[in-house]
Length: 206
Ligand code: SF4
Ligand code: SF4
Image: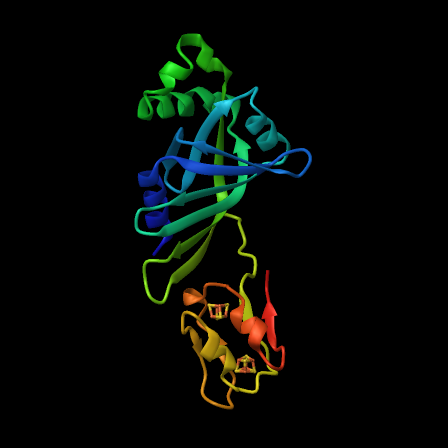
């Protein structure tokens, strides 16, 4: 898997979930299809008066998720910024050309209420449940940084093998009495190894 294939898959899914947080810190999710992909940048529109636009203007953090028919989740986390005034019409017209239904929603001059945002610094998480073991990959684009996530065996591991026996994906490597290691690209991050380690040497990263 790679970034560009993930973006193509999101494009095929078409209608994506966009999550933000409101002024009370509560999650807010809506589905958006008015998206244009330009290289690795996502352009999308909403109306200036919508709470979605206000949340993006005041906070900007956004998480976008799509699920394919092949049991793949693709999750993009980043910051949305309003595109400059002199680019607004250009990107709006491009999105309208690709999504003709928008003309029914905002006909004629009413489309001037639209505001265009872009996301160009983000992380992507790819997660596929159709393979055995499962597949997980993460990427950082632009200035985004990947945060540690999942589980990690510490140096106090005694190599007892308990974690291997309880791992639903068989994704822990290690010989008896030697340091064990999680194959992160196949880990569900379910925490079963963490709960069963007799010496509590497995760390939860986030
Ligand atoms: S978190 Fe779950 S899937 Fe990952 S290594 Fe531990 S038991 Fe296996
Ligand atoms: S259960 Fe804990 S001590 Fe035993 S092999 Fe796994 S990580 Fe090491």
